[in-house]
Length: 290
Length: 159
Ligand SMILES: Cc1cc2nc3c(=O)[nH]c(=O)nc-3n(C[C@H](O)[C@H](O)[C@H](O)COP(=O)(O)OP(=O)(O)OC[C@H]3O[C@@H](n4cnc5c(N)ncnc54)[C@H](O)[C@@H]3O)c2cc1C
Ligand code: FES
Ligand code: FES
Image (cartoon, rainbow over all chains, first blue to last red; front, side):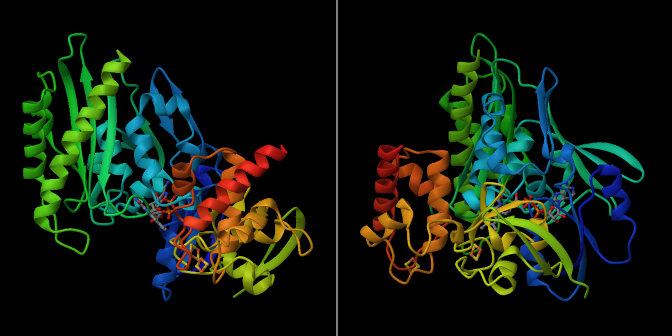
């Protein structure tokens, strides 16, 4: 893809109109950290770019009693500095903070991470863990899809051509409910996840886990919501035995591949370890929020 | 292909250029504006040699389209120090011998300036994490980090 045309609409309506108005392959752009690289590597096909960063609502957020409503194109550097968001969704903020370098975070967005739909995308398990939803808009109107149903395969998602992601919506966590995200990479910075785990847990005043979501990344074609792992946590005090059961359930649910970053066996093992550790972090945060 | 006429500001100076839609800001700076202080290492966001600021935010010029500069404020290494006067960061890089071949240095100086504007008193770990996207194949980073922390201390003393 070689960029042959650049458009910077000021409104979502204008962007949607641009998406259906051409014979040339058209893609929307947020930070461009995936799209610009992809456009360079397959430089034969002409590409029309619709830059969403001039649309105010795509770049803004709100946080109130209803929860978080995030403009999908806000860059991670701006997002990770939102202290009110970090208090309520520390796991999502830590996932965004893991994307690339300071420079990459100056451009890369959570919406772009989600829409690029890589199996190793860091924010996807973190979004699934907190029950985030995607509001999609197109010429035919709006629809809302849970993140776990949004991604359908490697680099594929449920958006039809002519649609775009308008908003990421997350309910406000109650006191006693918090999230965490951990990934494994062979280095300490600047690498792609070998495995990742996003967890959210809700504790009652007795410390009993009343709700949980466990999502794992980079160990299957898409990030997975693992209900059996959550079931192992619900109704317990998140004691070592229950957390070990959840870890085993996550390892069993994984269907990883072997590549130069890790073998099937290693990924299966390490994703369980990450589930265990992230659960304990989420537990501590949940206790502190009561 | 018709070139696009872009009006922007680079290091505080109003600048105009013509570019094709596929050109990156890095292509524009180096090839069209002859501002070759910004280096190209990888062209894929991995090395940080092309570090610039866009509206004050640190980013890789190879991950920005040239057309996106329209109406923005771009900051490059050419805006730091001058041929007759180096900035504190540049002086400290020299003093600590924090460069060998020098290809990574403009990017590191731009990134260090962004770091110290945001956090005038970074710990070593904070500096290393912030600068993790600036690769250096020569120095082994130790001297770079010493130069950065010394520059920070000097700038705090002067402030
Ligand atoms: C050096 C480097 C390191 C990286 N490290 C990591 C890492 O550690 N972890 C990680 O997960 N990723 C990493 N990435 C990948 C990338 O930065 C992320 O996926 C980023 O979040 C993408 O966001 P963006 O805004 O740049 O997306 P873009 O490149 O603008 O878009 C990506 C895709 O999503 C589509 N899209 C974007 N926004 C919308 C929308 N609102 N509606 C519909 N479609 C949309 C685009 O058409 C495109 O297909 C790295 C990239 C680089 C260059
Ligand atoms: S040339 Fe831009 S990061 Fe390497
Ligand atoms: S001095 Fe040669 S790459 Fe850093």
